[in-house]
Image (cartoon, rainbow, N blue to C red; front, side):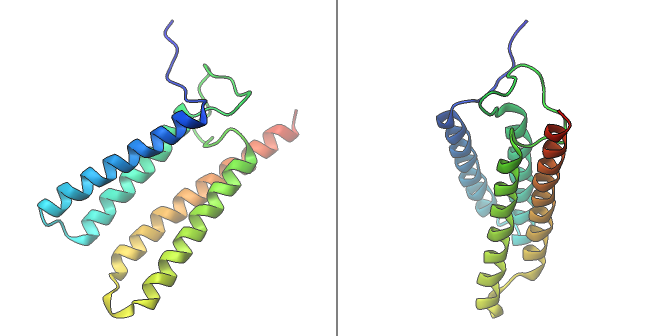
Length: 141
């Protein structure tokens, strides 16, 4: 049996995030080359972001977590606290995006901002829900 890919080291996890950054830069170049509308670009960035989170949730493992067994589909982190922290980071990041947009009102692309907010809300809720289920699961043991 072949062991599935699992990233346990913080350095490998940071490398995964760095690789995501390289892919985003490449996507930016491609979309700029074809003069993609901003709304479409924001959509592609968000789809890539959610895909990176979903795949990362499948391959990242926390210390002490079973490396071979797959996680339940809803589980995004190894521990409840990690999901809460990541959910808060997403919410704060989105709040900062809105604050920045409102500070530059005439130049704001509101449809793109709203689309980005919808994706961020889905990701934040997924992290919070994952943490709640993990906490309930740990309490039942």
